[in-house]
Image 1 (cartoon, rainbow, N blue to C red):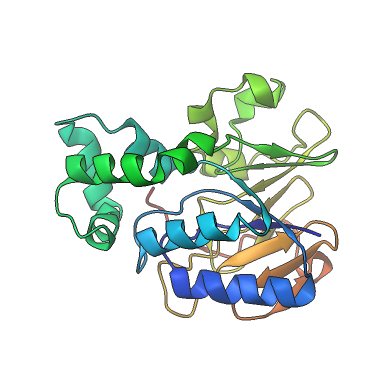
Image 2: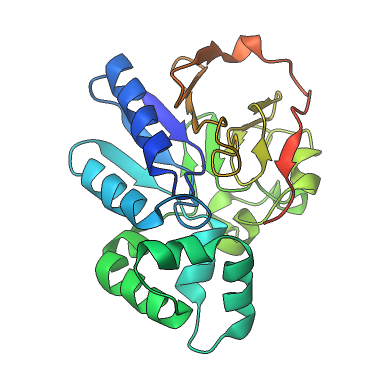
Length: 240
């Protein structure tokens, strides 16, 4: 069965719990990670080590998130990007790398995890679903997903969430990036980021698309039918 996993943001303990719950349900699952492995949480480096090792034994697809995008595009002396990373959790990534300088952090990430970063994909698609990090701009809804610039898939929030339409009149979108207290479910989209990095009692959530059920790091399993459609379960934080 296929599980789409929401933003991890360095939460290694919760991630390990989620994977243990998934593998108890399914011996050989397929895992699709929706991006944002770095920044904010307890140990981003441990997350990278864990998921790379995990991919040696379980089929994994790794999407790019906006935090990976910023690290990958950080240029030497780029103070604007450094300020963004410092403001939105990049210090925890540096700490996990035993560093204090962003340029040195970029060098270490690319030297030790370059293959992982180069493997990151902008989207994942099935016959009925498209998974992307933050959703799709409403103005791109009739553009083939392969033709949408990656930047247009990483920073969406309110205009996308309020746009109630199937992408290309066909695909339901699975997205992260915007942290909700509980998964967001509508007829055209499913938001699975439940803000694990913001609050101790918030889990990492995954969507099993073959059973249309949510499985989270607390071991809770809920059918999508249990969620009230189009009811926003409150956004934990509005920052990038």
